[in-house]
Length: 168
Image 1 (cartoon, rainbow, N blue to C red):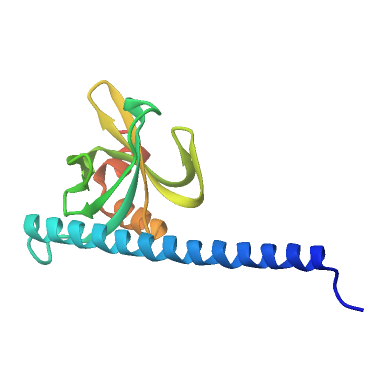
Image 2 (tube, rainbow, N blue to C red; image 1 turned 135 degrees about the vertical axis):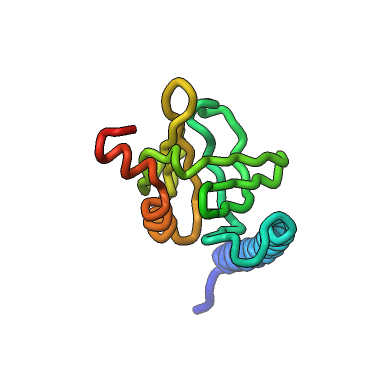
């Protein structure tokens, strides 16, 4: 007793569709990897053109920007380079070409969050609240080692000590 032809046909169609879907997924993953490597090379080149060797205390070439609180939720996310220097935190966004600089003396809080400006993710985000004229602003990034970034910023930010002692 063999498998009826209509059932066999359905099995073949389902198996063929699954194989095709896996092949397409593999192609998408290959393309995404190539795009990621291209972004990484572009950011690495930009950072090495701007900063001298040893000037960057920490750097992340694939930082994903989740926005500035003051600009609201309808702003563009983007990739770029996040750099911790002796006296400031700098983000160099690739597209649009934009640089955000936060003096470490203005940093008021560094934390790890899972959402920012209504954009929730299942990964930890580095969240930095800092002083601006007239109040504070906040910004968040996805970085590979958010906890290490949090510790490094807390160690280097004199504004955090001032905030904790009530002198800020």
